[in-house]
Image (cartoon, rainbow, N blue to C red):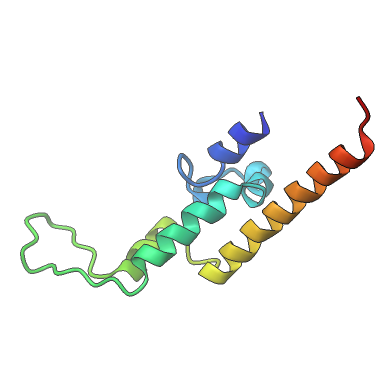
Length: 104
């Protein structure tokens, strides 16, 4: 159940900007969010696209515009890595407590 909530509110299905106010705290508990945002920032920062051959009326000239449109400009790559490391440490600590104190 916790993994499904994490995946649902991680940014793949719902943009963080489009979440209802009462569900906004679930966004911060999603490991998938930090993975998605980190990969998106890594790929889109510094990206320049050519609009000369665009056959549509809309053209996104650079990756920073896409980052802002998706609402991913609230954290940097270092923050994403730090959050993921915190998730790893927390899960390992809980596993240690389970192994240490639970008996057969």
